[in-house]
Image 1 (cartoon, rainbow, N blue to C red):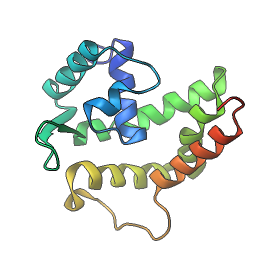
Image 2 (image 1 turned 45 degrees about the vertical axis):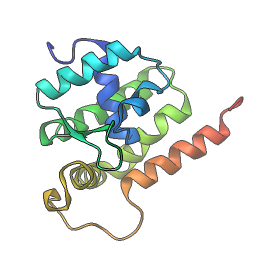
Image 3 (image 1 turned 135 degrees about the vertical axis):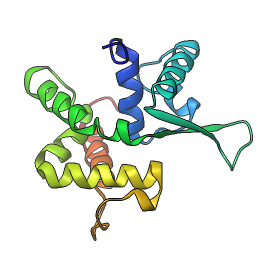
Length: 156
């Protein structure tokens, strides 16, 4: 609870896991509108606790890239369960539920595949535990479901 006991820490991790946000600016401009000093504090804490790593962005000298560690990737099933619970018991906008529904519909194989995709993206291709399946990635399926739900949302 010391690590996850506040609202922002889970939201920062969620955004890195589900939306692919890897830079400070991407995380700062999310829908929650976290303040820059609060975001910097949460990112530093997540790095300190070994859930994220921080490295210079080779494409831009003044940017850093945040990456998930294996211990953070191991939290994906927890996030999936929280998402499923929220979708079942709370009023959740379709766009926010869409990504989690892809994982829920695919069951354990989709969850394992998504975790491998995260390993490849954040830890490198050698960290993948299974061969990459043919067809669209789970991340691509989740993004497509999100975009479809967003298109169906009035006022967007």
